[in-house]
Length: 342
Ligand code: HPA
Ligand code: ZN
Image 1 (cartoon, rainbow, N blue to C red):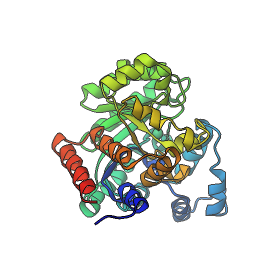
Image 2 (image 1 turned 45 degrees about the horizontal axis):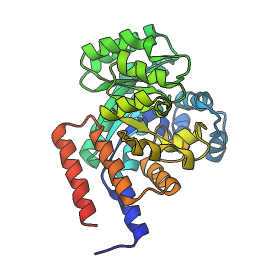
Image 3 (image 1 turned 90 degrees about the vertical axis):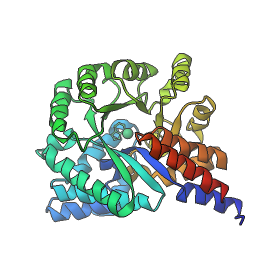
Image 4 (image 1 turned 60 degrees about the vertical axis):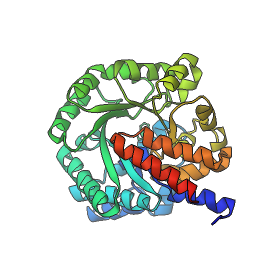
């Protein structure tokens, strides 16, 4: 049975299987839940309504976003708060075709406020287990080091994470990029890899291509988060394309912090043309106007991607994941079958 073109595109974007590979769980903290948890703990927040909170989400760079992001998460105190945050995310994206999610969390943003690593990771982990059981979404957890804190602090965080090796799959690197190059964390990542974690890092988001080189050569990462600045360096593009190093692009977030002045200028088309293994993710959906489906829809419309382009992006999201090879192949086959039967 054939369906109208717009309806076909809607179905592909909304219903087809997909992964999310660049998602900060603290970035899914919707204002409604911020209010609910603040009330639960009787803590005051400097906003009177959900609308007032949303009006404050007008960022001009990465730091102006991070300021609000860290402030909002300060109401998260107990295991159940982290559970509620995570299950709310999974419930939402189970309606968007997400079948597998690789989720960042920022331990230091909580341990620095006196919340234990164990509290944070247990709350998140219990929700991820529940998500797999009840919603059929598999997941892997990635603990990120805040790069604007010291390498010693990152090392302490890694050491705390060693007690939860069964629950944590990889390490990552996020927060203020400029002035905090990957080389600062070389020893931490070396130890993480020796301990059996995989590694990823935000690089080339606001800083130049050199940070991407460092992430690859000094940190041993398997994926680059964002990575837009690779486009300034032809030799780097050549390496990323020939080795198929994944780049986790986040269109609405990149526009939200004004790296690009509109989704029309987001370089996804160019990245695809260059043969880079890129896919669409949401980063901090509560702050930037959308989860993975809204990101895909926005970019499809803005740069007029066709059905094959979207299918390609969805396939890339599975190829770039840390899923076991058989599950990857199963999802890739399922995508082809679904497309053939549209
Ligand atoms: N970049 C850096 N740090 C972050 C981000 C991001 O996209 N999201 C949450 N912390
Ligand atoms: Zn990010």
